[in-house]
Image 1: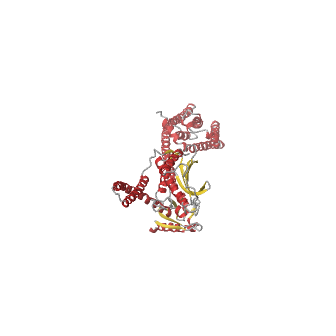
Image 2 (image 1 turned 45 degrees about the horizontal axis):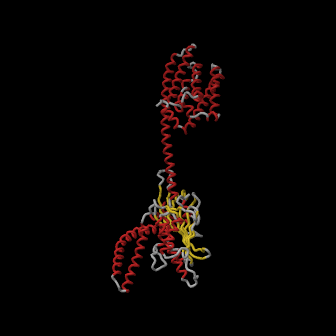
Image 3 (image 1 turned 90 degrees about the horizontal axis):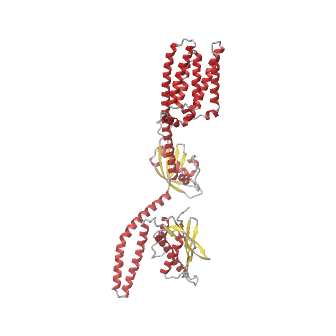
Length: 563
């Protein structure tokens, strides 16, 4: 590695400080140039023996330094790289000019008059800070040679300066020490600045990450000071505090709205150190909206500073209705796992009962006993369907097999279903399918179960509607439509008949809810659960199709490659 590589790397690290250091250097040069000119001019005006050459040199130096310091364009043209090596013209236009000027002053003054020895420290220090270490040592060498050369020129001219050569040699040694020390200090400053910048970048990244986590939290977060001013509120908290829309971003005061009085009490209790403030239920009574009950947890965050710090109170808000719904979902998930285990244990005894009943039916000639065995077989089949439904819900989806053509698959399933029901195509089931293919995300077997459940449900309600006294004389019929829609496909299963009553509609997709005494109540629930696995959506709505009022279940399937 070249000797200048490390200083160059140090200079790169001083990117942010270079402008300030360079501006200070230019200001110091300009001030020094003006001071030298004033000293020479005052000496001349007071009748001293100031040489005219020295006065002209100081005037020229003062003019150059003022122009360099006051013109922004000249400052902008200088950068780290232009001052890093002695081969750069910018280096000679700044540091080099100082060395040459002070060397000429030393020769003209002859070791008397101005303390030129001290003047050389400015370019040496500047080179140590802004240039490479090699350039700084070269500047120290040039300053020493300039000091000794000026004395030698004065000695040749006839002045007795031999005693000052020893002093010049000591000053030259000092130049080298200053160059090395300033270069080392600059390198240390660069390392500390790099470490500080790295820590600052990590702190900003961590702050951004923390803010992202807080913003995405479902739980509301409020940060309140002792003056009851809200410093921070994440989107969830702003939504909970709003009557219908989220409140404005902070800062805002909690006492501004009377509905937040419970939160004000919680904050005051928390700052007072009351243990009852750690977990409370607070009701927000809005004037034009239903009351909202929140579960509030409070935490105090001390400032950690003995003087001048400010304690803050952090409130964690949860909507009680949302919390209860999540608890119900967790209970349902636990019940689902337990039901899957029970269904697995029931399957083997159920198979044994079915086989034993079949053998018993073969040996029972009595019609009454035969009816009993038929009843046992029917209930065994019903229990088997329930077990199969529970096991389908418990099984994890195979995501490697989730692609199918909604049109072809729905046509095949509907035709198989109609043959199983003993129906003829077009008589009771009408298919309205497009000619195009619609690839969607769904497992073929799961889609068969969803569609068969919907067709069974539609056919049963169509038959019930046909038995009504005011029903038309023609046979009941159902319609299955497949249509393309944005992002996927729509599959609709329609049956004629009166709309489902509102008190039943709100429970349609709940498990074990059925309007029939012998229904398991799992059919529509299974349809919804299977649809959610593949990001599909199933809805019910009352509608008229082909001018016939009825009910429709619509499944919105997601495209295989959603945009």
